[in-house]
Length: 417
Ligand code: GLU
Image (tube, rainbow, N blue to C red; front, top):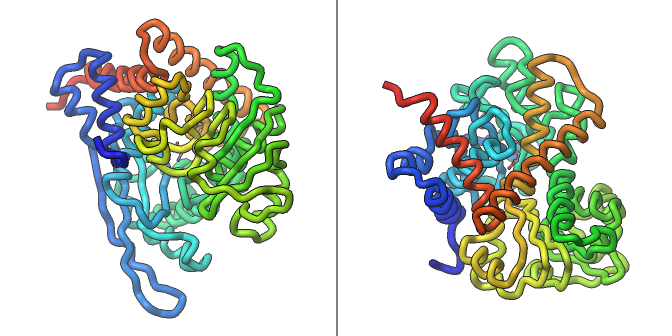
């Protein structure tokens, strides 16, 4: 295998492992590897200067055997159909693993949102939402934020869908602002879940999280708040990074101060007073207890896995570790808490948001956080029990549970016609 496996290669390889664990036949394997529906759309954009640019947009519904398809929308220049297919497949296993009644989907537009004005971003979002409108809806497929999108993107999507319908449909997307049907606690849910997953792993290993050192790659929506929550809980966050590079301080950083720095207009953490500058590659190789990759796929690969010194890798991102790297990490006794478990807090609270929207009855933030904690701790226990019983990695156990539940749904429903 090459040093840089694609996300789709990784996802298919992981599926192979689960299929082997479950002893599924070739037909079922093919069924689970194949997305049920893939859509590619043109997204014409009128730039502020009057010129026209046609972007490519995607939405893949990998599976809906257990309920409507669910998953985020990514705005990133490198997004393509294969990446979206991989991310949609991971959503299917993630939803099944944590026991929420959804299949998996993912969408994206190949664009760098940082290069667009706010008005251009709104036009791209609304046009993309209109193009995929035939296949989304509260009972069909429910988008949410992902890399490069946020709660404002979701508000525009909800508004566009509602305008076409002629009435307000809050349940068509999740991750919305609380003022228009969003849930308390959704904004920090993925990050909070990363913390719960990390603490479950540490507890199991008999390690106290207080004073544990942490490095976070990707100081964005997931990594930024994960760093803050871990810091607030007593960990020592020594390094964080973003697209431009990273900052390091052996005595600990103050994530809240870094977040404030970004909020007040800085476009990177690099150069923050009282820190040393490091590269993203250096951050991954730091001698810390917990490493949280919270950016993009494939950052821990065959070429650098051997240099990872952390005891725990807790995957805030989707697919940050390639299968080649998994093998190396396992050989070096690095415990990887896999993406479908570690970052499932986001979609878990998306599910709570959708339930609240459908009932038009909203919960307190404490209620949301308590339910999230219970759900994540239960998922962790199931995964670690299977891993122990079968002598397999947490990743293969998590995938096996998720894939097994989807295969079971297919069997129970039967094949039409
Ligand atoms: N984009 C997030 C993920 O990868 C959240 C998806 C959702 O809430 O539907 O899990």
